[in-house]
Amino acid sequence: MLARLAWAVYLTVLLAWLVFPIALVVIASFEGDLQVSLALRQFSLDAYRAIPRGYWESFRFTVSVAALATVCSLLISVPAAWGLVRGRLPERGVVSNLVLLPDIVPQLILGIALLTVFIPLRLSNSFAGVLLALMAMNLAMGLRFSEALLSGMAEEYEQAAQSLGAGRLTVFRLIVLPMIAPGVAIAALFLFMQNLIVFELLFFIAGPRATPISILLFSDIIDRGVVPQAIGMSALLVYAGIAFYAAVAMLLGPKYLAGTLMSRKG
Amino acid sequence: MELAEGALRRRRRRQDLLFFRLCTAPALLLTLLVGIAPLALMLVQSFIDQDSEAWTARYYVDSFTSSFFTRTLMTTLAMAAGVAACAIVIGLPMAYLLARRSWARNLLMPVITVPRMLPFVVVGYAMILLLAPMTGVLNKLLVDWGILAAPLFILFDWPGQALAFGYSAIVVAIGILTGVLMAVDPQLEDAAVSLGASRLRGFFTVTLPLGMPGVIAAGALIFTAVTTAYSIPVMLAGRVPYMISIVVATNLLTLEQPHLAYAQAVVVSVIAVAATAFAQIVLSRYGRQ
Image 1 (cartoon, rainbow over the protein chains, first blue to last red):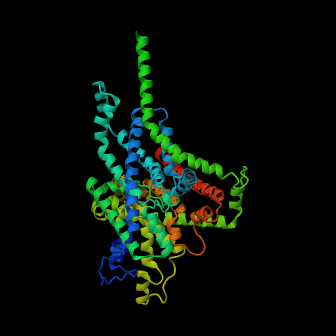
Image 2: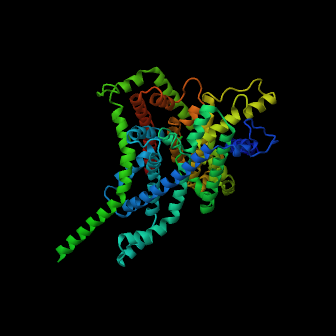
Image 3: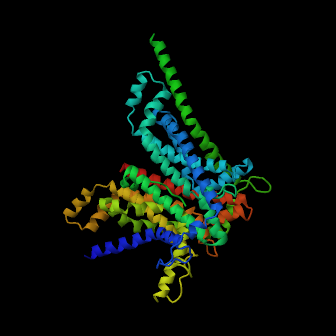
């Protein structure tokens, strides 16, 4: 009896703690006021209407650079994983560890290191610089994911196609790609979401001409404090997180998310 | 004839190797140019004097002899270790529940997963809405109900930062531990219980030791993440910087001491990489047992 009570209290407190930021941000965004009152008297969309042009531009920038980085890094990492797994390259261990390095080094440190290189190359404060940084980070996760996918896939189909006279590229296009496409799509979804919310890596590289939305919200709170339109934008990001969950849950079933070791650094 | 066949096979293998190496080339090139080279350059520059361009180790010596740097480093490491330990202890029962009961998984998974997709800035905003001294919901409620005489001023200090880190850390810990505990066979624990052990004892002597790799992995991940966090420490900063990332960023951006910042960044990354490597070594030992 006591154990049940303890479980109930524990679950209630923990769930309340986990839900509170989502709930508070969403409620505040609909009240259009900085003082959240739980009475829910006023309902308005003012906070959303007040979102300035700059926020939308930054949001569009974030989405486009995140999507492009996801696509580019997968275009690079899937063939690389194929070469490493199927080619039985002697240097496989070295190469895959090398590619993982940008993911092991803390994002903040990689961001500082990139800044020192990007300033003389005029890549800081630019779309290309942000894109390159995101790609270096995504490559590690993309490679790990596609290596696992390919190792788990039987090689016989490829050998059969090859013995029937298909060239390497034909095998890749007709056999490998269709077989790993579902897995790659999920990897893309994870990478895209990670790119949307990345902060430390891009903080030093970003500038007025290239501002991801999380950095814009951050500098606004530092300069001006909490403003209603920032809460509105935050609520939109919460909705993006929920949409992401719904997409993955529908594609995979909710069980899958439990074990995924998506590293989040902050 | 056989000789020619052997030569042909060797040539084909060479061609294959070349082809597959070409496949990996773009990935390798990008990593070298955008990952390895900048990090190596930063390491080299941390040993070069900013003004005279001579080789020097003075930035490291300066950092470690400055009591400000060492004190902030220690508070950072204490914060990271404390948050990791608390998050694992708090998350463990929830992870156990999620691993053993599928109804809980189906019901609670969104609550565990969606917070992982929130930018830290949003978590920071929520902390301010909750705990801000005058306007925060919790403070207003506690004062209205007469539980507190005056609002709590804990947000813009280390307790507020610890709560904000703890929020994301608990989510990460639950996610990793659930995955690991799901892989532990529940029949082992049932056997212990049928032999007379209590549920609690069965969990601590059978299930938890088998789930230890998850505890170590989660601990290392949370530790490195908190050590190098930047957004939360700045958003919820007090008067005295509490986290090392602020010191590094200040040296880099406002004090115009980039090479000192590089040296300190190297120190921080050595700590972070060492924590990750330590976890890897322990995990591989575990795997062999």
